[in-house]
Length: 346
Image (cartoon, rainbow, N blue to C red):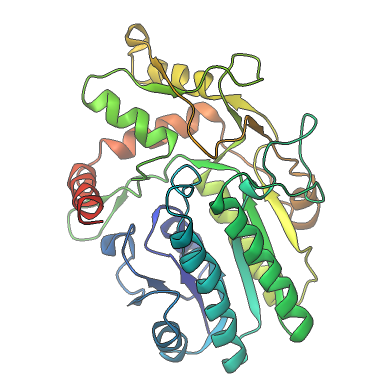
């Protein structure tokens, strides 16, 4: 039986597909391709094109083959964008999760790994945040993810057979190895986000422009935001381990942080990128703060290490090197152009 991955044609989802396939586990994908790419889904993996908030699309994906569990990644994901279009975030992220839970219940699908976010915490208190810390999201995106956790919690009370966990991502970066597509081509699973730090810096460097630091007056050591960066390959492995444990009947905690447990500032990230690409002399500019960006978020990974035996294995430089190699791989520029066209169409 298969696991259904919502959002499996996106940057993170496609890496999770690869992790499942490497472990000889069957997967199918539901994605509306609003930000994902058909070519990110490997040959032999069924892609159901449809919207999470459409019950008919979700039903079609669940009915096409036997499904034993769902990894739910699909949705809108940009904290900085969400204050401008909050209703879109509630429609897709909240209503989409409600529809998915409803359709799963109708078919007796009772295993769920939910893609949540460190944005549920807001600006943290202290040096590191654990899963039981207060939740004070500072953007509609963070609020929509927290509501998603609540929906799953409440549905599990109504349906005790629903076994679930939520993975609260910190800042996901990097790319897996550029891979052979089997037809003489190669494919790089690249983050094409219009808002995430790595692609923003890479776009600037590709134009010969100076990258930007958004805000230099935060209450942090160098004035820029501090984040916990985790490699997407390590994150994908965390999802696989969660699914395996649910398959085995292991009782999991309601939520796990997925990060390295160390903070790195935006300035430090940009300086590392400039060093890797040999552009230290270029420097960077400072731009105004973005709405919805907390000053600092660093997560404790103690719970997931104890329960999953999971530890991040790739450091910051490896994250940058892999991401830069993928950014310069054949096909990336064409997908960037496709994303630009999508955004222009709204």
